[in-house]
Image 1 (cartoon, helix red, strand yellow):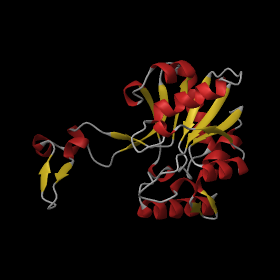
Image 2 (image 1 turned 135 degrees about the vertical axis):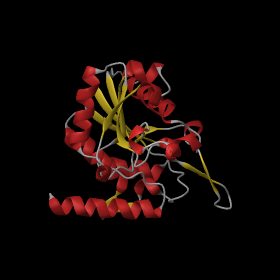
Image 3 (image 1 turned 120 degrees about the vertical axis):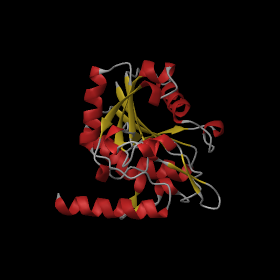
Image 4 (image 1 turned 180 degrees about the vertical axis):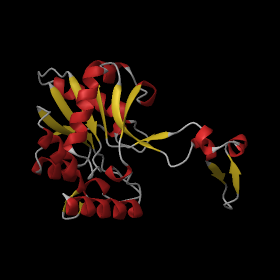
Length: 228
């Protein structure tokens, strides 16, 4: 059995009630639920939450609910333990799970194609976490440190003596989903050290951490909808 698990706690700080904030007319979590359902990959879509309002909204859009305990609902709770808890709770009702996709709730640009592509990659690399990655605009070696007075220093001074094409490229996690087998979720805690990255285009994701990111995501969604 394949299941999707959407971790959505209620205590977001930078964007209050972030996981159910309205995004172009619908709660943003509904986009993640809809993408999972439309992919036709999953026997069930679960939302792991500590919040009754998030649970009610998620149920309305077709998800089943896993009640998340308080010790997995604070600002410091990593993703992997949350997913492990949801797997165990779901299996406690007699089901057997083989493959799980963790989908983050604020991913309105996520497509069913990306989820399907991730699943296909998982079939080739059963012992890895599979997730989308985005190429950084510059090499990490060219990054700058900035202090409280906005004074800058180089992370790697030697990098500025080299040509751009001679520096190692860097990538970042797009923050949309992680596919893995049950065995991988239960045994491995470091996603990025045990990952298979799927390169994606810059316009297919936004890491929504603040109101400006939210506005950018809405603009990209509108632009994509206009050309489809």
